[in-house]
Image (cartoon, rainbow, N blue to C red; front, side, top):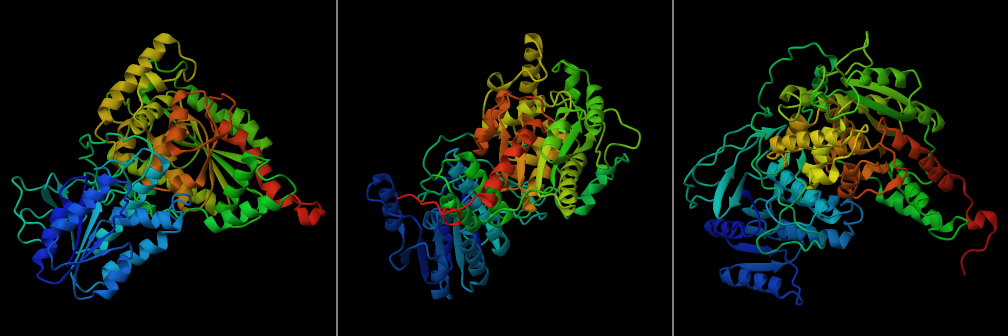
Length: 619
Protein backbone atom coordinates (compact mmCIF):
# COMPACT_ATOMS: atom_id res chain seq x y z
CA UNK A 1 0.00 0.00 0.00
CA UNK A 2 1.44 3.34 -1.11
CA UNK A 3 -0.77 6.29 -0.15
CA UNK A 4 -0.23 9.98 -0.94
CA UNK A 5 -2.01 12.31 1.52
CA UNK A 6 -2.40 15.89 0.31
CA UNK A 7 -3.81 18.91 2.09
CA UNK A 8 -3.32 22.50 3.10
CA UNK A 9 -2.17 24.11 6.31
CA UNK A 10 -4.02 22.78 9.38
CA UNK A 11 -6.19 20.57 7.16
CA UNK A 12 -5.77 17.45 9.29
CA UNK A 13 -3.68 15.60 6.74
CA UNK A 14 -1.01 14.58 9.27
CA UNK A 15 -3.58 13.16 11.67
CA UNK A 16 -5.18 11.20 8.86
CA UNK A 17 -1.82 9.83 7.71
CA UNK A 18 -1.03 8.71 11.27
CA UNK A 19 -4.35 6.86 11.55
CA UNK A 20 -3.71 5.08 8.24
CA UNK A 21 -0.22 4.03 9.35
CA UNK A 22 -1.54 2.74 12.68
CA UNK A 23 -4.24 0.70 10.91
CA UNK A 24 -1.66 -1.34 8.98
CA UNK A 25 -0.73 -3.24 12.13
CA UNK A 26 2.95 -3.28 11.18
CA UNK A 27 5.88 -1.60 12.85
CA UNK A 28 5.84 2.09 11.94
CA UNK A 29 8.88 4.19 11.12
CA UNK A 30 7.99 7.88 11.28
CA UNK A 31 10.18 10.16 9.13
CA UNK A 32 9.92 13.74 10.41
CA UNK A 33 11.35 16.21 7.92
CA UNK A 34 10.83 19.40 9.95
CA UNK A 35 14.09 21.10 10.86
CA UNK A 36 14.14 22.05 14.55
CA UNK A 37 14.96 25.71 15.09
CA UNK A 38 15.42 26.71 18.69
CA UNK A 39 15.01 30.37 17.75
CA UNK A 40 11.50 29.61 16.43
CA UNK A 41 9.37 28.83 19.46
CA UNK A 42 6.19 28.34 17.43
CA UNK A 43 7.77 25.72 15.14
CA UNK A 44 9.39 24.01 18.11
CA UNK A 45 5.95 23.73 19.75
CA UNK A 46 4.48 22.24 16.58
CA UNK A 47 7.20 19.59 16.39
CA UNK A 48 6.76 18.76 20.08
CA UNK A 49 3.00 18.32 19.62
CA UNK A 50 3.64 15.87 16.82
CA UNK A 51 6.10 13.90 18.92
CA UNK A 52 3.72 13.72 21.87
CA UNK A 53 0.83 12.22 19.88
CA UNK A 54 2.86 9.43 18.22
CA UNK A 55 2.39 5.95 19.75
CA UNK A 56 5.28 4.94 22.01
CA UNK A 57 6.00 1.89 19.87
CA UNK A 58 6.79 3.89 16.74
CA UNK A 59 10.36 4.65 15.85
CA UNK A 60 11.11 8.20 14.69
CA UNK A 61 13.83 9.49 12.42
CA UNK A 62 14.19 13.25 12.12
CA UNK A 63 15.99 13.36 8.78
CA UNK A 64 15.74 14.31 5.14
CA UNK A 65 17.29 10.99 4.04
CA UNK A 66 13.99 9.43 3.00
CA UNK A 67 15.45 7.07 0.39
CA UNK A 68 17.83 5.65 3.01
CA UNK A 69 15.01 5.07 5.48
CA UNK A 70 12.97 3.27 2.83
CA UNK A 71 15.93 1.05 1.96
CA UNK A 72 16.62 0.27 5.64
CA UNK A 73 12.99 -0.62 6.44
CA UNK A 74 11.62 -2.66 3.52
CA UNK A 75 9.04 -4.58 5.58
CA UNK A 76 7.84 -1.81 7.89
CA UNK A 77 5.21 0.84 7.43
CA UNK A 78 7.00 4.11 6.70
CA UNK A 79 5.20 7.42 7.27
CA UNK A 80 6.85 10.56 5.86
CA UNK A 81 5.60 13.92 7.19
CA UNK A 82 6.05 15.98 5.17
CA UNK A 83 7.52 16.29 1.66
CA UNK A 84 7.32 20.08 1.67
CA UNK A 85 9.80 20.16 4.54
CA UNK A 86 12.01 17.60 2.78
CA UNK A 87 12.08 19.62 -0.43
CA UNK A 88 12.91 22.83 1.41
CA UNK A 89 15.83 21.19 3.23
CA UNK A 90 17.20 19.67 0.03
CA UNK A 91 16.85 23.00 -1.82
CA UNK A 92 18.79 24.70 0.96
CA UNK A 93 21.49 22.02 0.85
CA UNK A 94 21.93 22.14 -2.95
CA UNK A 95 21.56 25.93 -3.42
CA UNK A 96 18.44 25.09 -5.38
CA UNK A 97 16.89 28.51 -4.83
CA UNK A 98 19.44 30.00 -7.22
CA UNK A 99 19.47 27.33 -9.93
CA UNK A 100 15.73 26.78 -10.31
CA UNK A 101 15.90 23.42 -8.53
CA UNK A 102 18.20 21.87 -11.13
CA UNK A 103 20.62 20.42 -8.58
CA UNK A 104 17.84 18.75 -6.59
CA UNK A 105 16.21 17.11 -9.63
CA UNK A 106 18.27 13.91 -9.30
CA UNK A 107 17.25 13.56 -5.65
CA UNK A 108 13.60 14.00 -6.60
CA UNK A 109 13.96 11.27 -9.22
CA UNK A 110 15.66 8.98 -6.71
CA UNK A 111 12.88 9.57 -4.18
CA UNK A 112 10.14 8.76 -6.71
CA UNK A 113 11.98 5.57 -7.72
CA UNK A 114 12.44 4.54 -4.07
CA UNK A 115 8.73 5.06 -3.39
CA UNK A 116 7.78 2.98 -6.43
CA UNK A 117 10.09 0.14 -5.31
CA UNK A 118 9.25 0.08 -1.58
CA UNK A 119 7.66 -3.33 -0.78
CA UNK A 120 6.15 -2.34 2.56
CA UNK A 121 3.30 0.03 3.39
CA UNK A 122 4.09 3.68 2.76
CA UNK A 123 2.20 6.85 3.67
CA UNK A 124 3.46 10.16 2.27
CA UNK A 125 2.20 13.55 3.48
CA UNK A 126 2.63 16.51 1.16
CA UNK A 127 1.27 20.07 0.88
CA UNK A 128 -1.21 20.49 -1.96
CA UNK A 129 -0.29 23.49 -4.09
CA UNK A 130 -2.74 26.36 -3.71
CA UNK A 131 -4.18 25.39 -0.33
CA UNK A 132 -1.64 27.03 1.93
CA UNK A 133 0.35 30.19 2.42
CA UNK A 134 3.51 30.68 0.37
CA UNK A 135 5.00 34.13 -0.27
CA UNK A 136 4.52 35.62 -3.73
CA UNK A 137 8.25 35.79 -4.35
CA UNK A 138 10.55 34.08 -6.83
CA UNK A 139 11.51 31.45 -4.24
CA UNK A 140 7.89 31.01 -3.22
CA UNK A 141 6.75 30.44 -6.79
CA UNK A 142 9.67 28.09 -7.40
CA UNK A 143 8.72 26.09 -4.30
CA UNK A 144 5.13 25.86 -5.57
CA UNK A 145 6.32 24.67 -8.97
CA UNK A 146 8.57 21.99 -7.52
CA UNK A 147 6.10 20.69 -4.93
CA UNK A 148 3.37 20.51 -7.57
CA UNK A 149 5.64 18.54 -9.89
CA UNK A 150 6.76 16.23 -7.06
CA UNK A 151 3.15 15.55 -6.07
CA UNK A 152 2.21 14.63 -9.63
CA UNK A 153 5.14 12.25 -9.98
CA UNK A 154 4.43 10.56 -6.67
CA UNK A 155 0.73 10.22 -7.47
CA UNK A 156 1.72 8.24 -10.56
CA UNK A 157 3.60 5.62 -8.51
CA UNK A 158 1.29 5.51 -5.48
CA UNK A 159 -1.66 3.14 -5.29
CA UNK A 160 -4.01 5.88 -4.16
CA UNK A 161 -4.18 9.51 -3.13
CA UNK A 162 -6.49 11.53 -0.90
CA UNK A 163 -7.06 15.23 -0.33
CA UNK A 164 -7.80 16.29 3.24
CA UNK A 165 -9.90 19.45 3.56
CA UNK A 166 -11.11 20.66 6.97
CA UNK A 167 -10.51 17.17 8.35
CA UNK A 168 -12.66 15.54 5.66
CA UNK A 169 -10.95 12.95 3.49
CA UNK A 170 -11.68 13.14 -0.23
CA UNK A 171 -10.47 10.24 -2.39
CA UNK A 172 -8.82 11.36 -5.62
CA UNK A 173 -9.53 9.31 -8.70
CA UNK A 174 -7.00 8.49 -11.37
CA UNK A 175 -7.23 10.74 -14.47
CA UNK A 176 -10.36 9.83 -16.40
CA UNK A 177 -11.70 7.53 -13.65
CA UNK A 178 -14.60 8.33 -11.28
CA UNK A 179 -13.72 9.00 -7.67
CA UNK A 180 -14.74 6.31 -5.25
CA UNK A 181 -17.31 7.51 -2.77
CA UNK A 182 -17.24 6.53 0.86
CA UNK A 183 -14.08 5.24 2.46
CA UNK A 184 -10.74 6.69 1.55
CA UNK A 185 -8.11 4.56 -0.20
CA UNK A 186 -5.68 2.92 2.16
CA UNK A 187 -7.76 3.58 5.25
CA UNK A 188 -10.72 1.19 5.69
CA UNK A 189 -11.60 2.79 9.01
CA UNK A 190 -12.12 6.24 7.52
CA UNK A 191 -15.77 7.34 7.57
CA UNK A 192 -17.48 8.37 4.38
CA UNK A 193 -18.06 12.09 3.93
CA UNK A 194 -21.57 13.41 4.28
CA UNK A 195 -21.63 14.19 0.57
CA UNK A 196 -19.48 11.87 -1.57
CA UNK A 197 -16.88 13.87 -3.45
CA UNK A 198 -17.55 14.23 -7.13
CA UNK A 199 -14.71 13.56 -9.50
CA UNK A 200 -12.80 16.76 -10.18
CA UNK A 201 -13.02 18.08 -13.72
CA UNK A 202 -9.85 17.55 -15.70
CA UNK A 203 -7.99 19.46 -18.37
CA UNK A 204 -5.29 17.72 -20.32
CA UNK A 205 -4.88 14.99 -17.72
CA UNK A 206 -4.63 17.29 -14.71
CA UNK A 207 -6.99 17.96 -11.84
CA UNK A 208 -8.70 21.35 -11.96
CA UNK A 209 -9.87 21.39 -8.39
CA UNK A 210 -6.46 20.32 -7.11
CA UNK A 211 -4.61 23.35 -8.47
CA UNK A 212 -2.52 21.53 -11.08
CA UNK A 213 -3.80 21.98 -14.62
CA UNK A 214 -2.36 21.03 -17.98
CA UNK A 215 0.97 20.05 -16.45
CA UNK A 216 1.18 23.39 -14.62
CA UNK A 217 1.02 24.39 -11.00
CA UNK A 218 -1.00 27.20 -9.56
CA UNK A 219 0.96 30.39 -8.97
CA UNK A 220 0.70 30.10 -5.20
CA UNK A 221 1.61 27.04 -3.11
CA UNK A 222 0.68 25.19 0.05
CA UNK A 223 2.52 24.28 3.19
CA UNK A 224 1.98 21.35 5.51
CA UNK A 225 0.17 21.14 8.85
CA UNK A 226 3.19 21.43 11.14
CA UNK A 227 6.26 21.27 8.94
CA UNK A 228 5.74 24.31 6.80
CA UNK A 229 8.85 25.21 4.76
CA UNK A 230 10.19 28.57 5.81
CA UNK A 231 10.22 30.43 2.50
CA UNK A 232 10.92 34.01 3.49
CA UNK A 233 9.62 37.31 2.22
CA UNK A 234 6.54 38.52 0.37
CA UNK A 235 2.88 38.33 1.21
CA UNK A 236 0.33 35.63 0.52
CA UNK A 237 -2.22 35.95 -2.24
CA UNK A 238 -5.75 34.61 -2.03
CA UNK A 239 -6.31 32.23 -4.94
CA UNK A 240 -9.35 30.36 -3.73
CA UNK A 241 -12.24 31.15 -6.16
CA UNK A 242 -14.42 28.42 -7.55
CA UNK A 243 -13.12 26.89 -10.74
CA UNK A 244 -14.99 27.79 -13.90
CA UNK A 245 -13.48 25.20 -16.22
CA UNK A 246 -16.13 22.51 -15.95
CA UNK A 247 -16.72 22.37 -19.67
CA UNK A 248 -13.09 21.73 -20.60
CA UNK A 249 -12.60 18.32 -22.25
CA UNK A 250 -10.84 15.73 -20.10
CA UNK A 251 -8.12 13.37 -21.23
CA UNK A 252 -10.53 10.55 -21.91
CA UNK A 253 -13.14 12.62 -23.71
CA UNK A 254 -13.51 13.03 -27.41
CA UNK A 255 -13.76 16.61 -28.59
CA UNK A 256 -16.34 17.41 -31.23
CA UNK A 257 -14.81 17.55 -34.70
CA UNK A 258 -13.99 21.04 -35.99
CA UNK A 259 -16.76 22.66 -37.96
CA UNK A 260 -14.39 24.92 -39.93
CA UNK A 261 -11.47 24.19 -42.16
CA UNK A 262 -8.98 26.59 -40.57
CA UNK A 263 -5.59 24.89 -40.87
CA UNK A 264 -4.51 25.56 -37.28
CA UNK A 265 -7.29 23.33 -35.93
CA UNK A 266 -5.34 20.31 -37.19
CA UNK A 267 -2.23 21.10 -35.11
CA UNK A 268 -3.62 19.22 -32.11
CA UNK A 269 -2.88 15.97 -33.96
CA UNK A 270 0.85 16.53 -33.51
CA UNK A 271 0.75 16.16 -29.71
CA UNK A 272 -0.60 13.47 -27.42
CA UNK A 273 -2.16 16.24 -25.35
CA UNK A 274 -1.63 19.73 -26.78
CA UNK A 275 -2.04 21.52 -23.44
CA UNK A 276 0.18 19.27 -21.31
CA UNK A 277 3.90 19.97 -21.50
CA UNK A 278 6.76 17.73 -20.37
CA UNK A 279 9.04 18.99 -17.58
CA UNK A 280 11.21 21.97 -18.44
CA UNK A 281 14.94 21.34 -18.05
CA UNK A 282 16.67 24.51 -16.86
CA UNK A 283 19.66 26.08 -18.59
CA UNK A 284 22.95 24.47 -17.56
CA UNK A 285 23.97 25.60 -14.10
CA UNK A 286 27.46 24.14 -14.62
CA UNK A 287 28.04 26.07 -17.84
CA UNK A 288 26.71 29.19 -16.15
CA UNK A 289 29.40 28.80 -13.50
CA UNK A 290 32.02 28.39 -16.25
CA UNK A 291 30.82 31.62 -17.88
CA UNK A 292 30.97 33.50 -14.58
CA UNK A 293 34.48 32.22 -14.03
CA UNK A 294 35.49 33.35 -17.52
CA UNK A 295 34.07 36.82 -16.85
CA UNK A 296 36.47 37.07 -13.90
CA UNK A 297 39.58 36.54 -16.06
CA UNK A 298 38.67 38.88 -18.92
CA UNK A 299 40.62 42.14 -19.16
CA UNK A 300 38.25 44.25 -17.07
CA UNK A 301 37.36 44.75 -13.43
CA UNK A 302 34.85 42.15 -12.26
CA UNK A 303 31.28 43.30 -12.91
CA UNK A 304 32.36 46.41 -14.79
CA UNK A 305 30.23 45.53 -17.83
CA UNK A 306 27.13 45.13 -15.70
CA UNK A 307 24.15 43.56 -17.45
CA UNK A 308 26.28 42.51 -20.43
CA UNK A 309 28.03 40.06 -18.16
CA UNK A 310 24.74 38.64 -16.84
CA UNK A 311 23.39 38.21 -20.38
CA UNK A 312 26.57 36.45 -21.47
CA UNK A 313 26.23 33.99 -18.60
CA UNK A 314 22.55 33.42 -19.42
CA UNK A 315 23.09 32.75 -23.13
CA UNK A 316 26.04 30.45 -22.32
CA UNK A 317 23.94 28.42 -19.91
CA UNK A 318 21.10 28.24 -22.46
CA UNK A 319 23.45 27.01 -25.19
CA UNK A 320 25.26 24.68 -22.80
CA UNK A 321 28.69 25.91 -23.90
CA UNK A 322 31.22 28.54 -22.84
CA UNK A 323 32.20 30.68 -24.62
CA UNK A 324 28.76 30.88 -26.27
CA UNK A 325 28.19 30.54 -29.99
CA UNK A 326 27.22 33.64 -31.99
CA UNK A 327 23.53 33.76 -32.87
CA UNK A 328 23.21 32.72 -36.51
CA UNK A 329 19.43 32.56 -36.88
CA UNK A 330 17.48 34.78 -34.51
CA UNK A 331 13.84 34.53 -35.54
CA UNK A 332 10.87 36.82 -34.84
CA UNK A 333 7.33 35.39 -35.07
CA UNK A 334 4.57 38.01 -35.02
CA UNK A 335 1.25 36.46 -33.89
CA UNK A 336 -1.63 38.37 -35.49
CA UNK A 337 -5.21 38.26 -34.30
CA UNK A 338 -8.30 40.43 -33.96
CA UNK A 339 -10.43 40.69 -30.83
CA UNK A 340 -14.18 41.14 -30.62
CA UNK A 341 -13.78 43.51 -27.67
CA UNK A 342 -12.25 46.05 -30.09
CA UNK A 343 -15.78 46.75 -31.34
CA UNK A 344 -16.53 48.32 -27.95
CA UNK A 345 -14.36 51.37 -28.51
CA UNK A 346 -11.30 50.22 -26.53
CA UNK A 347 -8.86 51.14 -29.31
CA UNK A 348 -8.11 54.27 -31.32
CA UNK A 349 -7.80 52.29 -34.58
CA UNK A 350 -10.28 50.18 -36.57
CA UNK A 351 -9.86 46.41 -36.84
CA UNK A 352 -8.84 46.41 -40.53
CA UNK A 353 -5.51 47.92 -39.49
CA UNK A 354 -4.39 44.45 -38.33
CA UNK A 355 -4.25 43.03 -41.86
CA UNK A 356 -2.80 46.24 -43.26
CA UNK A 357 0.03 46.16 -40.73
CA UNK A 358 0.60 42.45 -41.31
CA UNK A 359 1.16 43.23 -44.98
CA UNK A 360 3.49 46.07 -43.97
CA UNK A 361 5.59 43.71 -41.86
CA UNK A 362 5.81 41.14 -44.65
CA UNK A 363 6.73 43.92 -47.06
CA UNK A 364 9.58 45.03 -44.79
CA UNK A 365 8.27 48.51 -43.98
CA UNK A 366 7.20 48.07 -40.34
CA UNK A 367 9.29 49.01 -37.31
CA UNK A 368 9.92 45.36 -36.42
CA UNK A 369 11.06 44.69 -39.98
CA UNK A 370 13.58 47.52 -39.91
CA UNK A 371 14.85 46.66 -36.43
CA UNK A 372 15.18 42.99 -37.34
CA UNK A 373 17.34 43.77 -40.35
CA UNK A 374 19.60 45.90 -38.17
CA UNK A 375 19.82 43.13 -35.53
CA UNK A 376 20.49 40.26 -37.98
CA UNK A 377 17.10 38.62 -37.43
CA UNK A 378 14.30 37.52 -39.75
CA UNK A 379 10.56 37.98 -39.31
CA UNK A 380 7.56 35.75 -39.88
CA UNK A 381 3.88 36.71 -39.50
CA UNK A 382 1.47 34.04 -38.27
CA UNK A 383 -2.23 34.85 -38.79
CA UNK A 384 -3.95 33.21 -35.84
CA UNK A 385 -7.31 34.97 -35.84
CA UNK A 386 -7.41 38.03 -38.10
CA UNK A 387 -10.91 38.94 -39.25
CA UNK A 388 -9.76 39.57 -42.80
CA UNK A 389 -7.54 37.28 -44.80
CA UNK A 390 -4.96 37.66 -47.50
CA UNK A 391 -5.63 35.27 -50.39
CA UNK A 392 -3.38 32.29 -49.82
CA UNK A 393 -2.96 33.26 -46.16
CA UNK A 394 -0.02 34.68 -44.24
CA UNK A 395 0.65 31.35 -42.56
CA UNK A 396 -0.89 27.92 -42.18
CA UNK A 397 -1.90 27.85 -38.50
CA UNK A 398 -5.03 30.05 -38.43
CA UNK A 399 -7.61 29.05 -35.80
CA UNK A 400 -10.61 31.31 -36.51
CA UNK A 401 -11.64 34.80 -37.63
CA UNK A 402 -11.45 37.14 -34.62
CA UNK A 403 -11.64 36.00 -31.03
CA UNK A 404 -14.82 36.58 -29.03
CA UNK A 405 -15.64 39.77 -27.15
CA UNK A 406 -14.27 38.76 -23.76
CA UNK A 407 -16.39 41.19 -21.73
CA UNK A 408 -19.50 39.16 -22.60
CA UNK A 409 -18.42 35.83 -24.15
CA UNK A 410 -15.53 33.39 -24.26
CA UNK A 411 -12.67 34.29 -26.55
CA UNK A 412 -12.41 30.71 -27.86
CA UNK A 413 -14.20 27.38 -27.72
CA UNK A 414 -12.62 24.43 -25.86
CA UNK A 415 -11.47 22.94 -29.19
CA UNK A 416 -10.08 26.25 -30.38
CA UNK A 417 -7.99 26.97 -27.29
CA UNK A 418 -6.37 23.54 -27.48
CA UNK A 419 -5.73 24.08 -31.17
CA UNK A 420 -4.27 27.55 -30.59
CA UNK A 421 -1.84 26.28 -27.94
CA UNK A 422 -0.89 23.42 -30.26
CA UNK A 423 -0.40 25.87 -33.14
CA UNK A 424 2.01 27.92 -31.03
CA UNK A 425 3.89 24.76 -30.12
CA UNK A 426 4.06 23.74 -33.78
CA UNK A 427 5.43 27.12 -34.82
CA UNK A 428 8.14 26.88 -32.15
CA UNK A 429 9.00 23.37 -33.30
CA UNK A 430 9.15 24.49 -36.93
CA UNK A 431 11.51 27.33 -36.11
CA UNK A 432 13.83 25.27 -33.90
CA UNK A 433 13.88 22.42 -36.41
CA UNK A 434 14.83 24.97 -39.07
CA UNK A 435 17.85 26.08 -37.05
CA UNK A 436 16.56 29.03 -34.99
CA UNK A 437 18.92 29.63 -32.06
CA UNK A 438 16.92 32.45 -30.44
CA UNK A 439 13.20 33.21 -30.67
CA UNK A 440 11.16 36.38 -30.24
CA UNK A 441 7.37 36.51 -30.10
CA UNK A 442 5.67 39.66 -31.37
CA UNK A 443 2.02 40.66 -31.20
CA UNK A 444 -0.22 42.33 -33.76
CA UNK A 445 -3.91 43.03 -33.32
CA UNK A 446 -6.23 45.91 -32.60
CA UNK A 447 -7.58 45.59 -29.06
CA UNK A 448 -5.02 43.02 -27.87
CA UNK A 449 -3.85 45.06 -24.86
CA UNK A 450 -7.33 44.56 -23.37
CA UNK A 451 -7.08 40.76 -22.94
CA UNK A 452 -3.42 41.16 -22.01
CA UNK A 453 -4.36 43.50 -19.16
CA UNK A 454 -7.14 41.16 -18.03
CA UNK A 455 -4.66 38.29 -17.75
CA UNK A 456 -2.05 40.40 -15.98
CA UNK A 457 -4.57 41.74 -13.46
CA UNK A 458 -5.88 38.25 -12.70
CA UNK A 459 -2.47 36.61 -12.33
CA UNK A 460 -0.75 39.39 -10.38
CA UNK A 461 -3.75 40.38 -8.29
CA UNK A 462 -3.57 44.02 -9.36
CA UNK A 463 -6.52 46.34 -10.03
CA UNK A 464 -7.42 47.50 -13.59
CA UNK A 465 -7.19 51.18 -12.64
CA UNK A 466 -3.51 50.57 -11.85
CA UNK A 467 -2.66 48.68 -15.04
CA UNK A 468 -4.93 49.92 -17.84
CA UNK A 469 -2.84 51.92 -20.27
CA UNK A 470 -3.58 54.07 -23.28
CA UNK A 471 -2.75 51.35 -25.80
CA UNK A 472 -2.92 52.84 -29.27
CA UNK A 473 -3.55 56.30 -27.80
CA UNK A 474 -7.15 56.26 -26.53
CA UNK A 475 -8.66 59.33 -24.86
CA UNK A 476 -10.19 59.48 -21.38
CA UNK A 477 -13.59 58.19 -22.51
CA UNK A 478 -11.93 55.32 -24.36
CA UNK A 479 -9.87 54.55 -21.25
CA UNK A 480 -13.05 54.30 -19.18
CA UNK A 481 -14.66 51.98 -21.75
CA UNK A 482 -11.54 49.84 -21.79
CA UNK A 483 -11.39 49.65 -17.99
CA UNK A 484 -15.06 48.64 -17.80
CA UNK A 485 -14.53 45.91 -20.41
CA UNK A 486 -11.51 44.61 -18.48
CA UNK A 487 -13.47 44.50 -15.23
CA UNK A 488 -16.30 42.58 -16.93
CA UNK A 489 -13.84 40.09 -18.41
CA UNK A 490 -12.09 39.66 -15.06
CA UNK A 491 -15.40 38.85 -13.42
CA UNK A 492 -16.08 36.20 -16.07
CA UNK A 493 -12.70 34.53 -15.48
CA UNK A 494 -12.43 34.99 -11.71
CA UNK A 495 -13.00 31.27 -11.18
CA UNK A 496 -10.22 30.19 -13.54
CA UNK A 497 -7.13 31.43 -11.70
CA UNK A 498 -5.82 27.90 -11.21
CA UNK A 499 -6.36 26.88 -14.81
CA UNK A 500 -4.24 28.58 -17.51
CA UNK A 501 -6.05 26.79 -20.32
CA UNK A 502 -9.44 28.02 -19.10
CA UNK A 503 -8.09 31.56 -18.74
CA UNK A 504 -6.79 31.51 -22.31
CA UNK A 505 -10.15 30.25 -23.50
CA UNK A 506 -12.27 32.76 -21.62
CA UNK A 507 -10.34 36.01 -21.78
CA UNK A 508 -7.37 35.72 -24.14
CA UNK A 509 -7.72 34.84 -27.79
CA UNK A 510 -6.08 32.65 -30.41
CA UNK A 511 -3.05 34.94 -30.72
CA UNK A 512 -2.26 35.03 -26.99
CA UNK A 513 -2.96 31.30 -26.59
CA UNK A 514 -0.61 30.55 -29.48
CA UNK A 515 2.05 32.83 -27.96
CA UNK A 516 1.74 30.98 -24.64
CA UNK A 517 2.20 27.65 -26.42
CA UNK A 518 5.10 29.07 -28.43
CA UNK A 519 6.99 30.39 -25.38
CA UNK A 520 6.41 27.22 -23.37
CA UNK A 521 7.52 24.97 -26.25
CA UNK A 522 10.63 27.06 -26.85
CA UNK A 523 11.66 26.30 -23.26
CA UNK A 524 10.93 22.61 -23.78
CA UNK A 525 13.18 22.76 -26.87
CA UNK A 526 15.90 24.54 -24.82
CA UNK A 527 15.79 27.65 -27.02
CA UNK A 528 16.28 31.09 -25.43
CA UNK A 529 13.65 33.78 -25.99
CA UNK A 530 13.57 37.55 -25.64
CA UNK A 531 10.17 38.74 -24.42
CA UNK A 532 8.59 41.86 -25.90
CA UNK A 533 5.99 44.12 -24.29
CA UNK A 534 2.72 43.92 -22.36
CA UNK A 535 0.88 41.51 -24.68
CA UNK A 536 3.68 38.99 -25.11
CA UNK A 537 4.55 39.07 -21.41
CA UNK A 538 0.89 38.49 -20.48
CA UNK A 539 1.03 35.36 -22.63
CA UNK A 540 4.29 34.48 -20.87
CA UNK A 541 2.51 34.55 -17.49
CA UNK A 542 0.30 31.68 -18.65
CA UNK A 543 3.14 29.95 -20.51
CA UNK A 544 4.95 29.74 -17.16
CA UNK A 545 1.85 28.09 -15.68
CA UNK A 546 1.61 25.66 -18.60
CA UNK A 547 5.30 24.75 -18.36
CA UNK A 548 6.70 25.67 -14.92
CA UNK A 549 10.30 26.81 -15.14
CA UNK A 550 9.97 28.11 -18.70
CA UNK A 551 10.84 31.62 -17.52
CA UNK A 552 14.46 30.51 -17.00
CA UNK A 553 14.78 30.46 -20.80
CA UNK A 554 13.55 34.05 -21.21
CA UNK A 555 14.94 37.54 -20.80
CA UNK A 556 12.88 40.72 -20.96
CA UNK A 557 13.84 42.86 -23.94
CA UNK A 558 12.45 46.13 -22.65
CA UNK A 559 9.96 47.77 -20.32
CA UNK A 560 6.87 48.97 -22.12
CA UNK A 561 5.14 52.24 -21.34
CA UNK A 562 2.02 50.11 -20.70
CA UNK A 563 1.74 49.84 -16.88
CA UNK A 564 0.58 46.21 -17.06
CA UNK A 565 3.96 45.26 -18.45
CA UNK A 566 5.88 46.28 -15.34
CA UNK A 567 3.49 44.27 -13.17
CA UNK A 568 3.99 41.18 -15.32
CA UNK A 569 7.77 41.56 -15.34
CA UNK A 570 7.82 41.89 -11.55
CA UNK A 571 5.71 38.75 -11.20
CA UNK A 572 8.11 36.80 -13.43
CA UNK A 573 11.16 38.33 -11.69
CA UNK A 574 12.55 39.58 -15.00
CA UNK A 575 14.59 42.77 -15.39
CA UNK A 576 14.32 44.51 -18.80
CA UNK A 577 17.41 45.05 -20.92
CA UNK A 578 16.18 48.39 -22.32
CA UNK A 579 14.18 51.26 -20.78
CA UNK A 580 13.03 53.19 -23.86
CA UNK A 581 9.29 53.73 -23.05
CA UNK A 582 8.29 51.84 -26.19
CA UNK A 583 4.72 50.54 -26.61
CA UNK A 584 4.40 49.58 -30.27
CA UNK A 585 4.36 45.81 -29.95
CA UNK A 586 5.16 43.66 -33.01
CA UNK A 587 8.20 42.37 -31.10
CA UNK A 588 9.91 45.72 -31.67
CA UNK A 589 11.18 46.19 -28.10
CA UNK A 590 12.62 42.67 -27.96
CA UNK A 591 14.31 43.08 -31.34
CA UNK A 592 15.75 46.44 -30.23
CA UNK A 593 17.40 44.57 -27.33
CA UNK A 594 18.83 41.83 -29.56
CA UNK A 595 22.05 43.76 -30.42
CA UNK A 596 22.79 43.92 -26.70
CA UNK A 597 22.61 40.13 -26.55
CA UNK A 598 24.92 39.95 -29.56
CA UNK A 599 27.32 42.24 -27.70
CA UNK A 600 27.16 40.09 -24.55
CA UNK A 601 28.09 37.04 -26.60
CA UNK A 602 30.97 38.88 -28.26
CA UNK A 603 32.37 39.88 -24.87
CA UNK A 604 32.66 36.25 -23.77
CA UNK A 605 33.89 34.93 -27.12
CA UNK A 606 36.25 37.66 -28.33
CA UNK A 607 37.53 39.59 -25.33
CA UNK A 608 41.07 38.73 -24.22
CA UNK A 609 41.87 37.25 -20.84
CA UNK A 610 44.50 38.75 -18.55
CA UNK A 611 46.81 35.86 -19.42
CA UNK A 612 46.25 36.17 -23.19
CA UNK A 613 46.91 39.92 -23.21
CA UNK A 614 49.74 39.89 -20.70
CA UNK A 615 47.83 42.28 -18.46
CA UNK A 616 48.30 42.10 -14.72
CA UNK A 617 45.25 41.04 -12.80
CA UNK A 618 43.88 42.45 -9.58
CA UNK A 619 46.47 42.57 -6.83
